[in-house]
Length: 303
Image 1 (tube, rainbow, N blue to C red):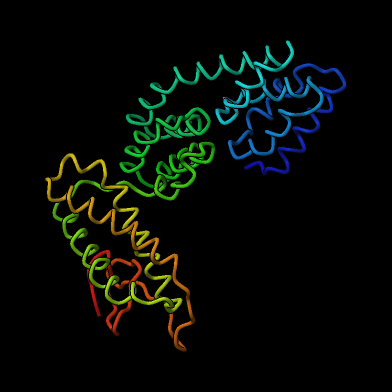
Image 2 (cartoon, rainbow, N blue to C red):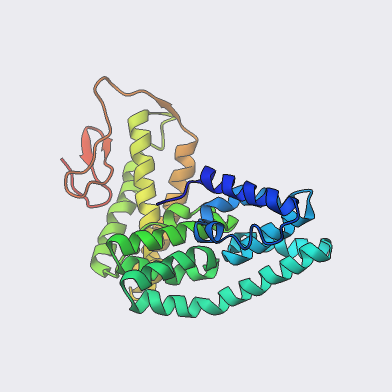
């Protein structure tokens, strides 16, 4: 049974009352709190690292050490330098546990790359709290090679790592997108269509306008997102492709930045009656309408 945030907090606060009354280990020794912890609960517990009662601060640190919650690492490093002996000792225990997690990373990757079933699931769950920002590229490679429940498990791990790193939150949607296998011909075609779409169609038909229909605005925004995600997922493949693809990659990346800034500066107006966003019948991606012609920037189909 999945434990919700409120239920977990209620149990945590009950344990905090026991700590305040003098029962040492009421949090960090509670198997229910340890076994049912989810990285998304850290935002609930974080405030108790600043509780007035140093016993609760110390026990919260020890609980976070027991569940190997890496999101607390910067704060606990600061706490160790400024807190009294009780809390400082708990911080030292947490930092030791973090070092153990670091040493565990290679083993977790070995399981994720070579095992299946329950072993894979346990390693993926463990990676949710132990994984570091530098582990994201390798995790994404595995993420792109598995499917179904295995991919869902790794998606949750990647999401947890991105949520606790400020430098990753802004590109969380890119991190959670599925990597692309190298295909030089397909990528060349994508570059050609996308560059034509932005440098010719957008530049000639949307760029000059100060106000655009809401449907057009939304379609272009979605098309830009498709391009941004594809470029992100093709970056590692550039070493396999030739110099023409690298040149096209750089050109399209620049156009995406330009068009995104240009689009953000426009006003929107409602379109005609009955107008609605359309999806491509071939690939399901967003389409853009210009001069009565509906086109898909992803697969190039038109109608």
